[in-house]
Length: 430
Ligand SMILES: Nc1ncnc2c1ncn2[C@@H]1O[C@H](COP(=O)(O)OP(=O)(O)O)[C@@H](O)[C@H]1O
Ligand SMILES: [Mg+2]
Image (cartoon, rainbow, N blue to C red; front, side):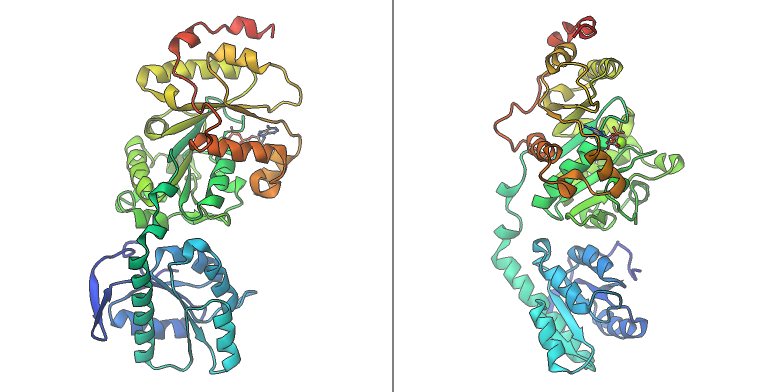
């Protein structure tokens, strides 16, 4: 539950607290006790802070990155307040967010426990309102100062990927496009936690959330309805669901009626804002060529086409490339990935390249069990079976797609002439 849903996050005005000037920060309070939460809220909103409430450790962990300070008060459930504190402190992406723990007693052991868990400050109950104000202010100032002193370590532009937005598409469904999108997204997120976003643009029946076993909070349709979220990076971030790999996800709307809410114009605006909010973005564009998908193909720095080794799919892909060559320059940024979705090799790589008139950058091995297990359990192979051949290939594909693998000729050329010469007749004899 949030007292102030979304809109207030990231305000840049300043307020005077106890005579000092600090940014009018948005704080997060983790509190399972409504009465205690109400007291703390009264104190802090009374002096001008905006305060959001999380009732569980998971919720707090997910929301922490959007706040300037986290206060941990009463925590119920299997994890203790110290466990939640430790989890936040052990997450590098949250290192700039101070954590203030409130011990439920004056017991010194309790307080030491919090300090050992990495709390930046601890105060014991009962406390005076002025002490809470003062500790919050001191922590905010201390962390603001260290941010000012080390801006380069927070946003190092050289740490950014060459390509930032990669769209995955296939003119045919059921060929592994979501498998590819989800695995490369998780692989990138593990290197850039909380700086990587996966958007499920397969709006009617997209299954990204299933592949990641995510409990959906908001979907793409909720963002499309909120004009401010399409404009403000911090607000957009608050709509995402966080996967344990550090990947942020905007799941598909989940019903055909809701899918209608996401049009081409909203998609363009969403992608522009997402590029401000994240370093790397992966779009699962599914297999329908409509306005939102055209926007995602157009805005992408790289496009991955899933190549399915079956003649009808290859013909559809060939046709798609012709259409796209007429409307823009997708070919120049395309990476073709052959997904060996059959137990036996029915078509040779060379024949497929010849038929499509383009080079295949890499291929994914067939596996009768791993991919299926991954979807059924909601654990992508790069996490569930990281040493497997499919996982190794998918991690490499992530590097290729984002232009980080110098050893590969990343993109196939937009070679209309070569495609015009391609011969599907030959394929049947291959
Ligand atoms: N190389 C492969 N070998 C075996 N099964 C695969 C392979 N690639 C994908 N699959 C399986 O095919 C099914 C469809 O994959 P999915 O990624 O959902 O396709 P799409 O997004 O194109 O509809 C899934 O059950 C997936 O596990
Ligand atoms: Mg799919």
